[in-house]
Length: 119
Image 1 (tube, one colour):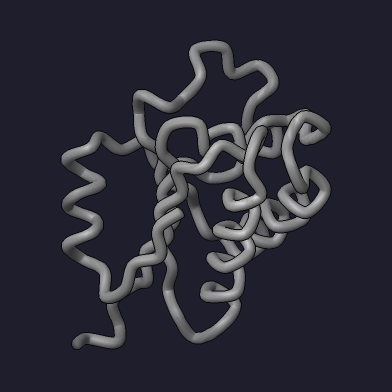
Image 2 (tube, rainbow, N blue to C red; image 1 turned 120 degrees about the vertical axis):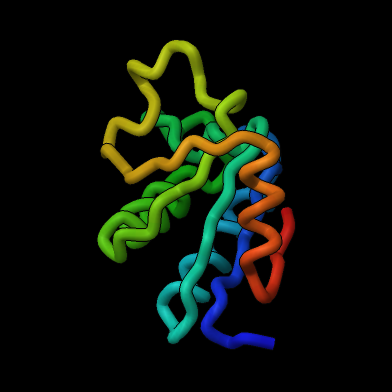
């Protein structure tokens, strides 16, 4: 296996109802902090990880901290196009780098990674 390929973290859990979305982001941060490239994909309700108001999110303070650390490391979020909110006024206010992707593009990304962590 080519160790230079990235580790993919796919997050589909809803951070408004589950701590698993935060845990996935924390794990992605840990992977990125090491010698590993990480690809983070948000699908469905996981897009709420980028909500400006973290009060409605389980583990909201931790999510804000993890987002900030990932932004400083310049790790973008690949986000499923259909998960991007139509009203983005209170979404991704911090300007985290985003890469909109289709489901086909997500499948392509998965084919170019060496490991998968799925939440």
